Amino acid sequence: MKKILLIAISTLFLACTQKEQRPTTAFPLKLEDLEANRKMSSAMERAFKHYEAPRLLDNELYSNFRYTEVDGFDYNGGDGTITRRDPSKIIFENGKYYIWYTYRNTATEPRGYKAANDTIPSMDWDLAEIWYATSIDGFTWEEQGVAVPRPEKPKPGWRSVATADILKFKDKYYLYYQAFNAPSGKYDPERDAYDICPVAMSKADSPDGPWTPVDKVVVPFGDSTEWDWRVIHDPNPLVHDGKIYLYYKSGLDVRDANRKFWDCWGLVIADDPEGPFEKHPLSPVTNSGHETMIFPFREGVAALIGTDGIEHYTIQYAKDWVNFEIMSVSQLFPTAGGVYCPDAFTDTKNADGITWGLSHFINAGNDWGNMYSKLGRFDCDLSLSVNDPSLKQSNILYPNELYFSRGLSEEQRKRIDDRNKALSNK
Ligand code: AAL
Image 1: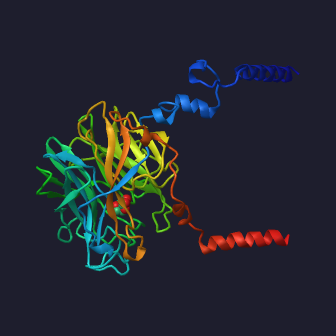
Image 2: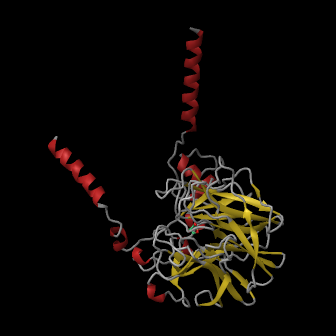
């Protein structure tokens, strides 16, 4: 009896306090009329407490993206034999911008790993080298040629070197890249995966080279039971607290052609560009992101997480460079962007952020049979020193053709028709 009484009293008390917490007036029209401790719904509370500001316009870590074709790159009429993709960060040195990227110039377009040989590429990034280009304005580029060629077999990367990113550290330059020893797409029974390559590195005294390869694996794979056992991709080095913070993509689960894998990003830290790189014990530090752009922002680091994963199309921030939180949701992200990031290596505690970069456009000719990728420019306002309200708009409307270009497959249409038939037969 005593117990029942106690339960009744506490239920009554809970109901009263909950009722008490309910606001007695409607939410005000003007923010200046909002009472300080007003009880809010979770979504409204999030708008005020989690985000930088409740209005998107006032959020430094929100932007939409504008795109511009760039001049200076030839693609052989788009026949699939020349590709440029996976650009690095952009740095400004000797009065000009520098960018590095995967460059493939092959006898044919990519034909899959079964048809691949010494001259026929399996994938868009097979049989590739790392090339570089410079620009005065970021719109017209002058290709300078090869920075890192494919080394002699069996050195790391003899089959292809791809997806480079740049580090400037103590006045020297370092390119980190994926070093393939087999055509991408070929099944590797040891790792039970298809796009296997260690991260290698080359160094130089000038961004114009010459580049000397450090013939070793710089970022080690995890053990066979660990999350980053299968791949280490997209190395992105930055400088923080006097050390090199290198973010990279790997993924949990099966890395097969059906993309069952779960892409996440890890963090390794070293005192020296050649390593040893120590894995941060909280890795993976993102739960999403195929080609993620990570750059210093204020005292922390921001991440543009484009395709893939539960938090795709979000812009995130980690004040401590490890624990990322969603700051905004955006759309039409650059794919595999290389950002112009003036504070990438300055180790400042108030990094300005980014306003532009180059990204790649996969299947540039809209013809998967002659697959190649091209580089283009994106602009955005993820910078403390720029204030461009047009880049803060979120009502971005796309041409109708874009929606209808994503039509149903025959299989999907059949499923829908079958369901309709079943309904009408009931
Ligand atoms: C890219 C990157 C890596 C992959 C392939 C080439 O966009 O994620 O570099 O291996 O695709």
